[in-house]
Amino acid sequence: PLVFADKERILSGGNFHAEPIAFCLDFMAIGLAELASISERRIFRMLDSKLSGLNAFLAKKPGLHSGFMLGQTTAAALVSHNKTLCHPASVDSIPTSADQEDHVSMSMNAALKALEVLENTKYVLAIEMLCACQALDLLAPLKSSSYLERVKRRIRKQVPFVTRDRTLTPLIERIKKLIDRETIA
Image (tube, rainbow, N blue to C red):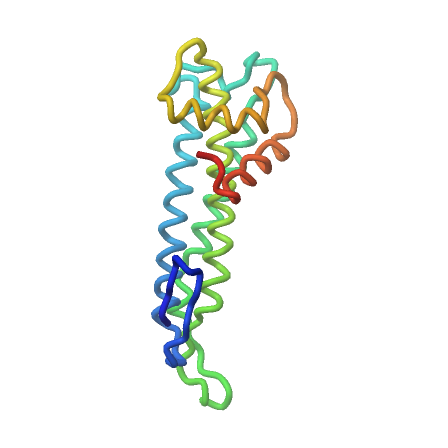
């Protein structure tokens, strides 16, 4: 197919076999999974007081509150799920229709898996941003770069500093919406 990203348009080139697209989608999913994986590792380091020098689990009152412990657990689960989704769909062709469909590209499966990996990755990134804002606030009055401070201000308009244990789901969802709208930076 011909892909015109700037016009958000895809035109079929008349080739019925979508295996090249399946390859691209499989590799895109792998790349996204790696992005989520390294994001989760940064979350892990922020929450471990021995590694970060910050309060354990970024809790305002460590020992009394769990902080962002379950956020990291969620990120780790999403990263592990991404790994299982990254088995290439394009290598799994099965002849069908009395051998009329002899070699199937599996591009639709690759697309669906890539979309799921993308969504999971956005959630992991939202958790990292939630943790990073908390970490930056715990480091006050120290400041980060002007760019990161601007990102933090945008997030803080939607998500407050966490002072006690609470469900993190609505906070993560708000940040993910900023990511979805591409308005985070």
